[in-house]
Length: 497
Ligand code: NAD
Image 1 (tube, helix red, strand yellow):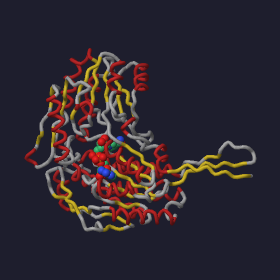
Image 2 (image 1 turned 120 degrees about the vertical axis):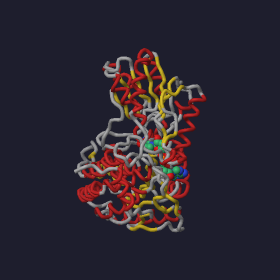
Image 3 (image 1 turned 60 degrees about the vertical axis):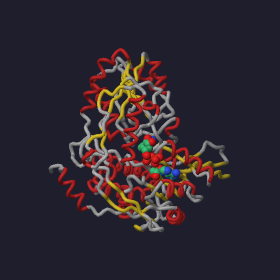
Image 4 (image 1 turned 90 degrees about the horizontal axis):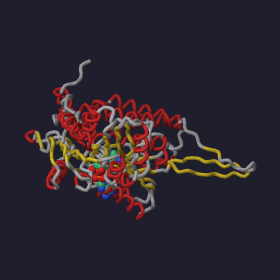
């Protein structure tokens, strides 16, 4: 079967019936105050939908519904194998609706349709399915007690989980939370970003169709400072799981302290170093990977390889390869299947990215390629992938998360200096090392303060390994069985025999 063309996607877009209401207690409802906001596409500025702008009153309704579902045991006390069946069915429905969901994602936040379809959707499906499949294969423990006692170490669902997620991989970030949260028996209130609410709203219906009882998944679109903070301050929310900026992550810790000391798990920002040593096995591959690490998803990636650390002795040879590779990443219409760089999420993000490009120039860094807004006539928000040379790690563009396709090249003399620069950041999400020396690879990987380290590759990972950050990139981990820690409390039960 031939792949849909841009015209095919446009035709489908024109027929979409976009749901913008909140999903509370098993049904779509307007925000109780009747407020809405306009969802505008960054692709070309088209209006997509009016979306419910929920507030504290809606948070209250959703928490009550979630709590009632949890206490009733309709989901929380189902056998793990029964929950597994629903989760798998849910993943199948996501798969069946992949094209519709991918289209919504692309229209809503501007990423290329090929990425929505081939990266975001499979990643989302996988998280739901993997977590469901795992849940009837994990066992609790019996403690090594004396003969006259029995010590049971069991895991229990925490209860009501608020999942607050960002806009860069809207459905996938939501799914990284929903998979383990639901599989372990919790009730969830999902708060998508106000900049990309559509897929979260849509999948609520699919979850019900899959057999999830009402109240177990509620979706509250709206702003962070209204419904987001209401959830984070709520006395009857047991856990907040978050992906987003470090600034808001810190705020959520404050909210927890000001309310019920709810558990707070944070996946936050990054400024990841990609270290290329002179003995990298393949400089061409390293250059292509460096370009992809900053241009994929318009650089709106928490693990974006935004600091390219290059050993001085190969810089003259290596940088032209990177420039060439960057030119292969070109902003285009996100519904064109050939496009590999889409629109930035909105005009605020565009201003932010252009502002950083100006800051780089003002601090004396030199642009080797890119640096401009493009395709302005479309009404969309597009920026050229941009490469800065002559960056010092003290510059603003090397210290702050730009969240756009802007790459800074920083040179180093030796491994010690590379590690020092790499770790000289408040963040600690990811890092990469390119070398053919196995000892150097291991020693550098050990020295890097980051939750994921890649050797001779960038951005590897699947459901089998934990994902998350050191330092101000967060705490706790998404993916793998380790993710279940966030959604369960450990209980020790002692029995006198
Ligand atoms: P953000 O922090 O601005 O917003 C994230 C979410 O928090 C949104 O849903 C927002 O509405 C909500 N929010 C905002 N203020 C709030 C408040 N006061 N109380 C409660 N909720 C509030 O982040 P963003 O701009 O949506 O996303 C980009 C950020 O996400 C980047 O920093 C990126 O690195 C990070 N990110 C991290 C990971 C990871 O796994 N570590 C993955 C993807 C994105």
